[in-house]
Image 1 (cartoon, rainbow, N blue to C red):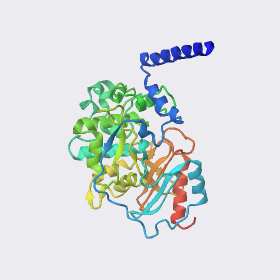
Image 2 (cartoon, rainbow, N blue to C red):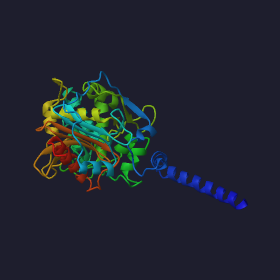
Image 3 (tube, helix red, strand yellow):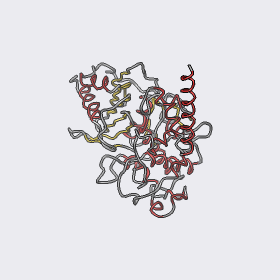
Length: 386
């Protein structure tokens, strides 16, 4: 018993020293990481982690229900799709054809009303808010310098950085997009309680506007610009600009960096459902219109879904661009662990997939093989070859 007490005392001292070291070295955000992620049995952010963070709320208005196609759920999932859904932990798979839900299925106890983390799909929404802020005169245009809003970026190379550079991932900052390193700025941004300080500490180390480099910090800084330009909280602006006009069915929590008057984690973390996420795919498919009303400028939409840089044909302004092996062109919202809203305007098809995992990473900015499975097998179902 004496040895056990001694051991416990030593252990307590070590824990106190460890915690003190984390605070001294300004890495105390790791305590939140352990509490919210590892103690819940995960090694990275997960679909339901919004329950463990403070949230702002994107308010829904009058729901605009998706109609069901006359052939609703008459198709059968292909064996390859079933295999992928099982292996990668799909929780929602949906095909929308001609603006009607043609097929949908939910798994692992989730349903049409379940809310799960959007992860980086929200980047497309933030880019849409940039387009809205420009059309409303809050922001002059894509070429307006970020330094007009934050003087921290008004000298040297940083003075050249524009809001368009942020939307197209071409800021030239020293952002480090590593999800599994506890000491990367990506991890700090997810768990730190002062996200604005983290972002304003970024350095512009390459000339902005020259090339694509995927960086969540770009979207976060863009969101801070939009808040400052509009004078509105981002969740409020998203609600009034899109969530309500598009008829989203449910309020959506948006993770904050801290309780009270915190900043939303704008590069990720809106908790919504498959049907509501799909609305942004339809909006862009229809050139910014919803039920005949021009919600977003069509020229901005067109610019968003084509490459900005010839050397990076996979990205536009807030949207990923993908060409399938059979020559079809898609644009998509895309998030960590395989959250997708995939759009083909020519065929009037939207495919939504949400889930726990994706196929192994091909590298930052590369398309994983699961994307081709969800597309190809979905088209097999549409073509009656399941």
